[in-house]
Length: 125
Image 1: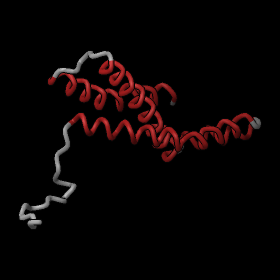
Image 2 (image 1 turned 60 degrees about the vertical axis):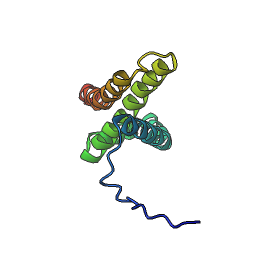
Image 3 (image 1 turned 135 degrees about the horizontal axis):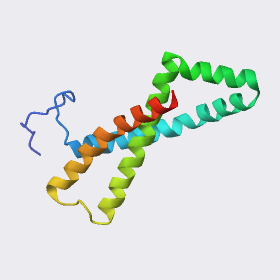
Image 4 (image 1 turned 90 degrees about the horizontal axis):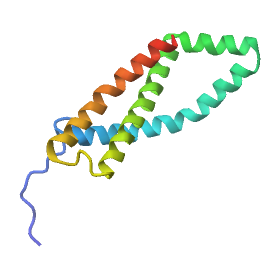
């Protein structure tokens, strides 16, 4: 067996992933965020339904800077996962499978998800 003389490139900060790979990784991250947020959402709903004081505490938490950021992250994860899921359904139906279109749809999901999250956050506050 001969030793390999090829250089090994391991600097992950300089590797440029295709836009489709970035969208796919973000889809997986959004799914994990949504899964991990389930207990938090159940706890907040339980606290809000416990009475008038609990509801006020939930509103105060969601209007704090950390709560607003967490709500934006959750809304981004929800909108990205939803839009990417629609994109994957269209790809399964053989729509947008050709070379430039699958890149356009990936860019559209990556661009539209934060905008939808901002729009929903604006409507909730």
